[in-house]
Amino acid sequence: MADSSFDIVSKVDKMEADNAVNQAQKEIAQRYDFKGVGASIEWSGEKLLLKASTEERVKAVLDVLEQKFIKRGVSLRSLDSGEPFASGKEFRIEVGLKNGIASDDAKKISKIIRDEAPKSVKSQIQGDELRVQSKSRDDLQATIALLKGKDLDVALQFINFR
Image 1 (tube, rainbow, N blue to C red):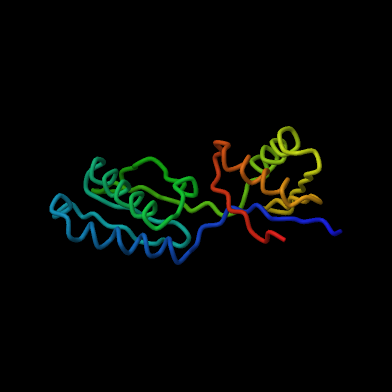
Image 2: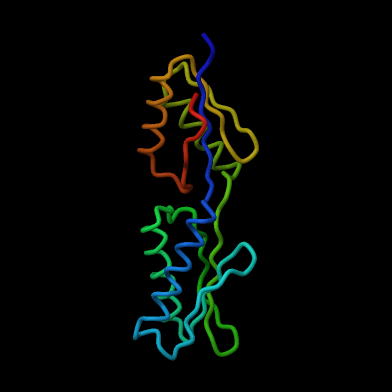
């Protein structure tokens, strides 16, 4: 019998992220507390740029954005938001989207699998994702449950379960 396997990845669905940003832009345009403070959200390459006239307002813009990401089912662990900084007469926050698993996080996940998962389960790092293999599909499902229960710094998705 061939080994069963699945891949562990950390990817943000670009369409869901775009939909969340559009919803946040609509809410900011409609809300009374954002009138006249120059609040906005816009894509700047692969990052989001949040702007407002005061530090409190730009933090409120970030809060609205996070709420929309939660509603769209995108994990907040995949957001990499910086601190507010002054730029001229306005405050800005840059928010990046994390794609891929960093090598140190991959090593952490691999160690958890080695130490706590059933013994038949093997994992290997392949670039910015992990491949997990075992002869038993039940052991693989137990491994998925184990990783979902852990409090890791990255948003994990489990794909290609065969």
